[in-house]
Image: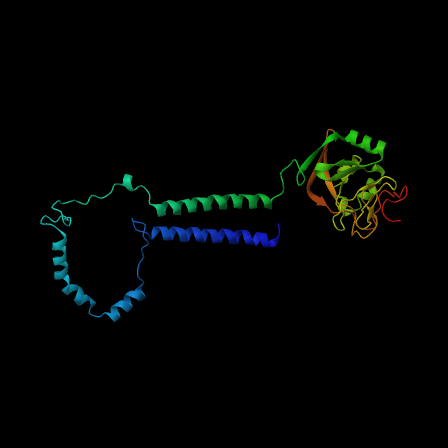
Length: 288
């Protein structure tokens, strides 16, 4: 994952949280009829007081006028009377069952629920993307369908690698006589157990620019068609612009069953490493 995406994810989550908070505050600032209400700031109240110094007196003096207005609005018993009618109707407050939920509250809650579900799904997807894939595919542990003996028999008889597509890996024999030299190469430290059992797993990706490196049956080498890098049977560089040998994967071999750990490629041997002494056995497939 790129650095920009890692930074963008928390920024989006924070922005969404602010929007949810703001929506909640707006909903809380509505009255029972759904109208937006608010309060005056202290500065506004102070300005009103300065511009209307006699507001208090006017309020006190207008009490009589308000009393007269109330008398005209209510009947003798204090119940509002209908205009042009002799009947009197009492105001009955609506019950909670009748009101239930306002239209504004319905939309506000719908928006909050939708945003919460969307953010939860987006966050879960981002978290899963940050971690390696689970076992069973490339990026995890891949079981080889054939046993160790079958793989070695296949490569010896056909003189080609045993390719494992799910692991993007070539399996080839490693001469047990060369294990002593391999132990002197720091990059091979984690590969020694597999080498001692006569096998090595090479990543198909060229360490130069990432092309898939095919096998050349005539030279018995790996030869990259993109820029001509060449590697011997165990992935050690023999020519071309590649900065090192082919990368490898650790092997777990138990009772003849092979498991390839593709979670972390192991960097290939440095230029000049030659543990097997294998030269080209025929004409090259790439270049002259």
